[in-house]
Length: 116
Image 1 (cartoon, helix red, strand yellow):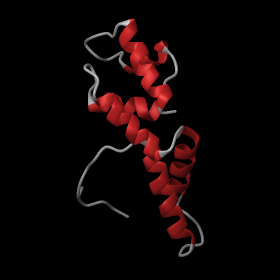
Image 2: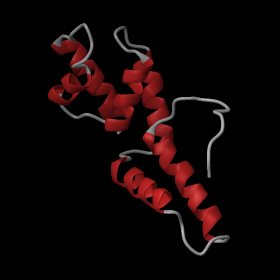
Image 3: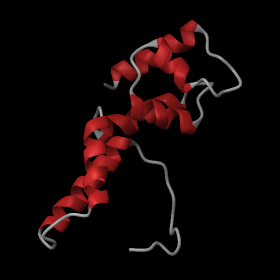
Image 4: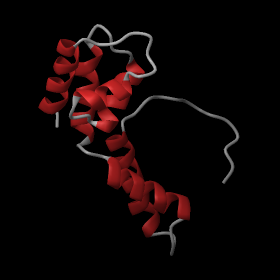
């Protein structure tokens, strides 16, 4: 299948991707005898890395978006990775031109743990 043009684009979290892929898998199992390699690998990847439910991930992105030094890209990255320590958060912010204080890191971690 070749993609000719992008119809629309939106950010979604990894748990949402997992849900969509599982829906596609269930639809295709009835019609095809074997799934494509790429689809199987994508489902395995999403199952391995999705650490929460889609509803909780979306709620986490919304909660993080209200913070001062939070860009949408970082909020989605945090929702996908679900960091549990300051070091993991610092790695996410490593490319940014600013650094977060310990209190800001702790505030983000509290929000993440509340949505785990």
